[in-house]
Amino acid sequence: MADHPEVSAEIVLRLSSICLGLPEAHEERAWVGTRWMIGKKNFAHVLTIATGWPPAYAQAAGSDGPATVLTFRLPLPRADAPRFKRAPFFRPVWFPNIVGMTIDGHTDWDEVADLLTESYCVLAPKKLAALVDRSTD
Image (cartoon, rainbow, N blue to C red; front, side, top):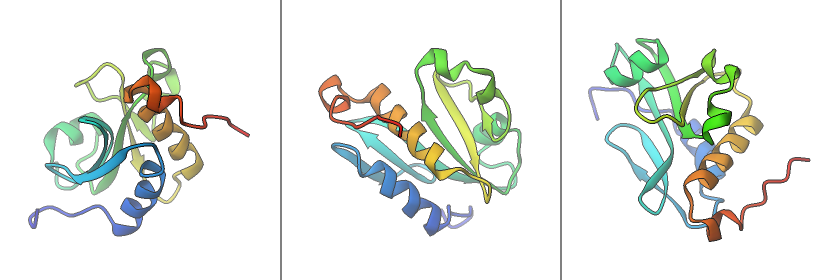
């Protein structure tokens, strides 16, 4: 949308390289920002908050922006861990297992890769999730 800032191409490329490496994942433009899907399920969504828009994300992140935010899903017990209730993380209210995080110069991209892989596995059919190497070395 021309009236609202886009997520930087560098961030979208980094996220794409993680998400599109997962079985049958695909990328598409969302109503705002970019999302990655397995089937019809959204396992990652990145967008930019600016001047309080979009309001649901600005409220969830506690920021009027500018800020780049990423949302993903985790198993409910993990999503409820205290670490996901403080910066750079936040907890939107629209799904019980959704977690958001602010992407900035301090972002740990290895952690992002782990979180997005886990998000994919939460939403993917079991046969596809079983194909994912989730070992942590």
